[in-house]
Image 1 (cartoon, rainbow, N blue to C red):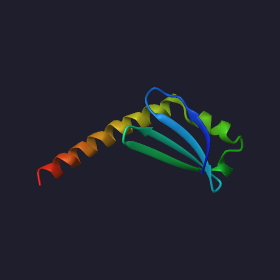
Image 2 (cartoon, rainbow, N blue to C red; image 1 turned 90 degrees about the horizontal axis):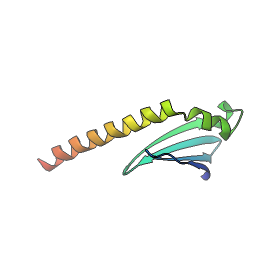
Image 3 (cartoon, helix red, strand yellow; image 1 turned 135 degrees about the horizontal axis):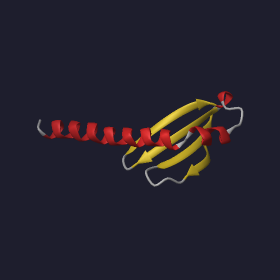
Length: 83
């Protein structure tokens, strides 16, 4: 897996990789991560097209999902502690 780019963002770490003819977009925030795998064939402009895909609207939904992931994990952990 080869790192193509790291995009600065105050809400999460965003890294774009290339592996096996796929672009992999990884978002990380704390202990949580989200990964999206995209065929390189779908992006004729290469990684520049991937940059355009990662707009603020998309990042907003990703950060909202991180909040949901945290809530889900906390609820599961509380159930675990009560066993």
